Image (cartoon, rainbow, N blue to C red; front, side):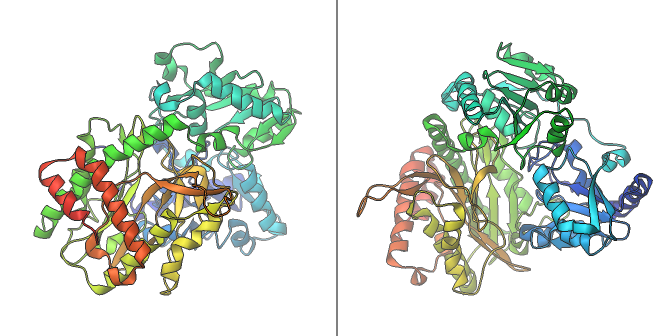
Amino acid sequence: MFQTFTAATSPEQGPPRLEALRAEMRAEGLDAYIVPRADAHQGEYVAPCDERLAWLTGFTGSAGFAVITADEAGVFIDGRYKLQVRAQVADDFTPVDWPATRPGKWLAGRLTAGAKVGFDPWLHTADEIEKLAKDLGDAGVPTPAPNLVDRIWTDRPAPPDAPAFAHPIEFAGETSGDKRRRMADVVTGDGHSAAVLTLPDSICWLLNIRGNDIPRNPVVQAFAILHADACVSLFADSAKFEALGPDPAIDIAPKDAFAEALRSLEGPVRVDRTTAPLAVSEILSDAGIEVAWGDDPCILAKARKNDAELAGMREAHLRDGAAMVRFLAWLDAEAPGGGVTEIGAVTALEGFRRATNSLREISFETISGAGPNGAIVHYRVTEGTNRPLKQGELYLVDSGGQYPDGTTDITRTVVVGAPDDEQRACFTRVLQGMIAISTARFPRGLAGRDLDALARAPLWRAGLDYDHGTGHGVGAYLSVHEGPQRISRISEVKLEEGMILSNEPGYYREGAFGIRIENLIVVEKAPELGDKRDHLSFETLTFVPIDRRLIDKAMLARWEIDWIDSYHRAVLERIGPRVDGDDLAWLKAATRPL
């Protein structure tokens, strides 16, 4: 099994660790200290050795941070984790609604003028610290400090050392040399002599490599410098790259040589203020080298998938769709008898994906929530929380696979037995929002924030909503959460052809049920209509039935019914040839017209 079900943390571990941290704060003369979720590469998912937030507080969510003072410990979480954080942290920690409450503002009301707010400059970006300083005002001063958590974490795991491997050209669609020259042209075109790369997925995309340094994400942890001549200085354990063979355009040095290499550069050096550690720009500035703030040049290029990447993603989704159909057919047969648990469902689903003989990893910890557990947006089932799937309850399963040709992410909510009217009404509103995004046609130049309301409108009409974004970017055999594109109220990144996003509205009723329906979609040029304006639309990548038992047809417009029937015809056409026997019979029944 890729997934395990032991609880990684427990609330009682937090208080003594919190006291040990405060002792180190006093020794350093700090009035507050920030413990982020992120590592030095600013990844959403981190290696076990970098799970400092979880180790200190018990909170295991993929976003958030802690702010510690002498007498308070705030754990800052967004709407996805309001229920989870309560179950995972001790009373010594106070959940704080973020980003509604920013850390600097929270601290400003708790510190006296000139207080020192400590942070590790390798774990925070320049953008973060600038905002912190502004919000603090006269109440405090952001103060670079040693990593105090690492001081007290005596059994900290070793850094990852998995070997890197080549990502084949048939899946990458472009050689590393061509990518490097293209990105170097971007850098020099902006008048910069070099660009610092700190995001592992950017580096892996640029060099056409993958790895296993981070669970669920096929990336290699490294730092890199892209030079004007398209050569790359790579800073990582050279042993990781022995199987790849030498490349004269790529120089590999130990990670601890990164700082000295920065000092040897000639400016201006491009640094991404939103992703690079603050330490990078400080090292350059201290050496008298001009820092040129600019986006990581790989981010947008990586987001615009080429033809080969799209072809791989389509095939991965068909393969994964067949595994999902086998799982849902199995679930429909077994769950009504009462013998299926949340863990049993996860185990079965991973088994169906493994049976494809192509699964490299799951793309994230499967969210398997029955009844009230489905209302915990990023619920992770453990042996202590595992519950059976019961008659009349909803079951939410959000999962995905990492295949050599693509990354998948799909959520389906199904009912065990027969649903009640309220479950059907809520499900149908969520489905209407998903259909609205699927069928959206919009002018080129719009961003995700311009579309987000389409998914929420059916819920808003009933006074309902959800506390997460509608969609995130997805990589091609890379990170399942990939920027910069997303569908959310705050996303200003323009949507462009080739960008892949999730489409996943939801609704969650605490103590009762959770509903989410998710397909992956790719931005494409829309067919010409009307006065032939330049419009974009979405192609759907995911083909798995939507539970017809939960759809209230009377709530739907004719065009929505037509979309569902058309989608289900496409599911049967594409997935039908990949399954047989009882699974095919189940699929035919599940895709009947409304």
